[in-house]
Length: 152
Image (cartoon, rainbow, N blue to C red; front, side, top):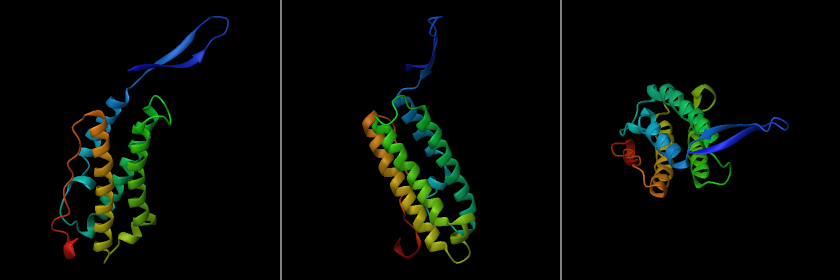
């Protein structure tokens, strides 16, 4: 844990400060948060009717990752920042694949929906593996794509 100055006083010789979290602490919190997200953890093909719930979960994950990025002590200088941005980008891409209000994941789009989920999981797993290796943390163990339609 570090200390970050937030304000200085000239004549009163005062300094306001706050405690900051180490990258390792933030990394573990991110991994713990993602480990509990249904959009990432259910391993079989998902019916299209779950698209709205998955999009809502992805949106929540994207917002929470932005919060974690704000907690990092040294903006732009940490590997963790790069990894968290890459994970957040995966969620952004999933949301974009769904289109405005999820219309691209509508009726008859089960394959597209599951392909987008697979890409999200792959990207998240790859980045989470790098984070857990770097900080020697217990990482994510996301499900494989077994059981997906058409051998996907």
